[in-house]
Length: 250
Image (cartoon, rainbow, N blue to C red; front, side, top):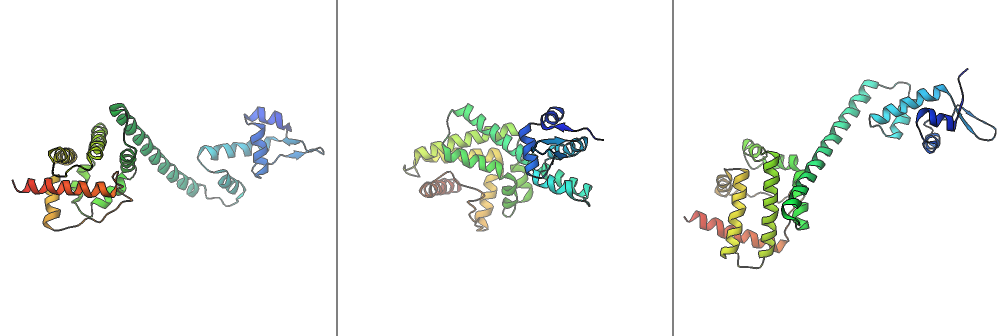
């Protein structure tokens, strides 16, 4: 005959809390082997085996709802289920890697600058989060090898460039309202293109190619959110046009 344990004894033996055992009972996930006339719960050795299954599946990342389904199903395809769960975990790991990377970039910027404009900060973090999607979108307009080269920088170099770009965007916001053709504004635009050249040395040639073919890149504010207001964007576009016209006239 299987040994019976009071809920306190069972909790101590399995390392679970009484509260968790109550919850598992309510979810019909782990029912006691026996209820006394007074309603006291008693567990058996078979309950220990069932609890081990629950703990194992939780470790593999299954939700309690899914565990309930798997424990009571009779034709469970274990291999298919594990393969699916593995893929889920890989995706979660990739997400966590992106989050950790974004935090590293954020901390680096804070250490370098102390403070960053919130809109600039969020736009740069968004770019890290959407990097893969951005790459695919850019390949609609630029050669694939050029796009891959843009994203092939070392992590250290990317953090350095993101920090420089954040500082430059802050300065552009501070200069908003000045004459777009003024030396101060044009110097900031020159810095912008200098940073672009650090990312991809062929930036100027690509811009010329787009202009020469009169290709217009559709706006994708969801994929490439701007840290600037509409008025700031128009002003920066004007400043860039001044810069580019001057560059082409030389």
